[in-house]
Length: 527
Image 1 (cartoon, rainbow, N blue to C red):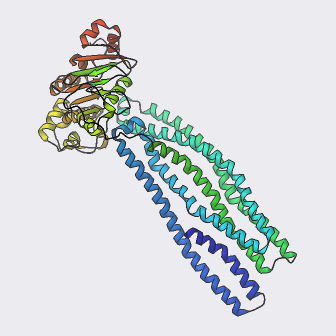
Image 2: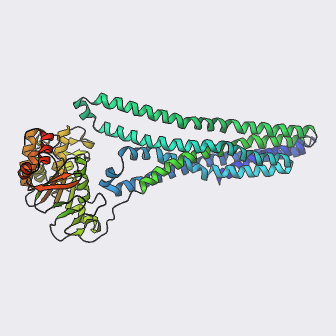
């Protein structure tokens, strides 16, 4: 409303000036001239106020759209919970949050100044038609011609921007991963290699940005230049009509004012089209994210007591009260099995013979815990980090830290832990994560590579203490560590994501050459 009224006030002003000239100035009627001048002053003041309100309302609209979109994204990310990193990269979420939502907000210009610009164009065409049908026809034909010139560039920009946005999400994801593992990279001496790789991918993204910038720069140039050329054509025609006596002096001034004012809405329509083009690319990424399926919390009650978990896709069975290990030729396969058994991926897994997908999610989350080796650590004192959502019990926290052999971290339970455990070493972070899982004491603990960042002596101590701490509880570890495998009641040897053999660690060493080769490849001859 404010945008439309503002544009209309701009469009009406040349008409008022023409009336002041033809009715007051030309016949030298001072009273009439001052009357029209007063009207022009009033309209000008109103236009200034409307311009302020238009800017305020459009800024509010853009911010509201961006923030509401961000709220939708954050709400959906929260609902996805621990399933989020399994379905989308951190870099994609970052790019959506700091770029896409604001691009969508700018696209909302189409609903404000975009609509107002169309109304202003129609008003100017009507006013011009009152002066000259020829000039009105030129305006009505010229603006669509401008659109036809710009449209191919907008389509090209949209295609290039889509590819650019895809690469941008990937690069941001790599940046998040590198920053998160910077301390480890420094320790391993891999910082320079990752820096060089990031430079190459960043250069490729820059080149892709040039492909977006090419048509975008033409849109900018044409958006500013074509309306001026259009203005010159209309003024030239009006001047010829004035020379022939078909236009009065006031009408000639009005035509100049109409076309000069028309530069603004035409320019606005061009750049609104550009904003909408980029907004569509951003909106598609956002809607793709919002379409990621959430777990339905509703469902049937869980089994009354401890029950076996079974994954038909792999043949893995985890019995309650037993220590089960998964040793696979590809670690990703074992991690996927844990995700399926924890209902973080769609599957036909069962719990106590009943489909896991049909059981109420809160029951699953309260009794089955999937502890990944890269799970986030929240900032706070150590006792709160280990206790998680529960109220800290210092004695229980110390027992959990002792089970995880985290004595070098747990001497002081008030010790501050930075977000992500950034003030801890890689091994300390891993042991704090394990302590947090032990503290939770779930009915079934599913953990992936819980000792991959510790030395052999610490790993042996963890294996002994964990098997004791989890007595009577079900535990499933994805690991190729012979120390942990030797403590397991049952070991499933996986090939291609399927169970190829089952037995104890020593039985499999003796009977399955592939299993022995797998463990030997990971840990040499220390079997």
